[in-house]
Amino acid sequence: MKDKLEKLKKEILDYLKDVKDNDVLREFEIKYLSRKGKLAEVLKGLKNLDASERKEIGQLANEVKKEIQNKFQEVKNIVSGEGGQDKIIDVTLPGKKIKKGSISPLTIVQNELEDLFTSMGFMVLDGPELESDYYNFEAVNIPKNHPARDMQDTFYIDKKNKDDEYDLVMRTHTSSVQVRAMQKYGAPLRCVVPGRVFRCEAIDASHEHTFDQMEGLMVGENISLDNLIAVMKELLKGIFHKEMEVRVRPGYFPFVEPGIELDIKCTLCEGKGCPACKNSGWLELFPAGLVHPKVLEYGGIDSKKYSGFAFGLGLTRLVMMKYGINDIRAFNNGDLRFLKQF
Ligand code: DAH
Image (tube, rainbow, N blue to C red; front, side, top):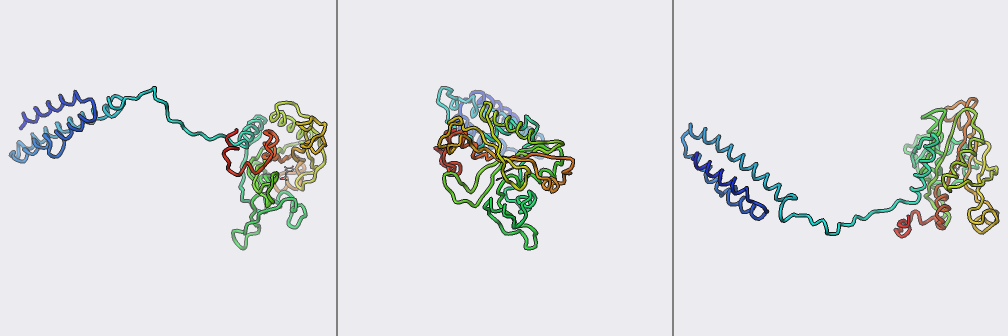
């Protein structure tokens, strides 16, 4: 029995040395390792041995079996891996083409702006899209029943619980994150907040129910309109890659005092007047202002010690101006012909 085992082991290991492909390996497996194979047959002889011999030979049999199995696995790995003749990789064959999407123009511009602002020490913050009436309106100085609420058509959502003090709204602007940021980080503070906002609009080429804004907020000691305009000019240089001529007009927003509208000289006619700028020579770019003391107080910041500026960039509008996109609906309709151009 012992001799038989040794002989079989030698036979098997010799056989395995020459196996180079899967078919031969399969044949080998059937011939030697299957239930009716040669190894099983020899092992069957164990039960005819007397007890003392069975122990010794049994141990040997186990060792042989293990050795054979290890060798078999080793050869199998080689044959089915790169070394196998039937698996040689032909590196000259054309590869499989992986379909890649493209980056939305909104994301491209958002990334650029985030880089620009972080280089000026601003944090990039996020806030909830489903927001409480409190942060969206009250905390930015638009109390209930204030006529300024009419400036933004709003999707109201039922309160979570009947007894909750505030309704929920799909946020109408990213200004909703101003007081959240002040409460969390205090003063001094510099942040931008890119994100989606929602309005109950009748949709046409220039109105959408879902679009993107980027809010900016800087709070510190002695922050003035000068700081605001300096940052805005830096921002415009980043977007248009040249110095832009700007003009400032007064504008009304309850959360800033004074509030301004920042215009740039029309990029198409350079100020001469054309249909794009309604013959005024100027394009309305974004509103901004000095943060209203009440908003600072809502944010837990001492308005006697600190002041700040805020601006509300219409990200979607900016992207439309930058790439000459004339229909806002293109952003959300999922048409790949639009998206693939970027
Ligand atoms: N939240 C305003 C809107 O969506 C835009 C805005 C105006 C934001 C003035 C500001 C600001 O931060 O100072 O209409």
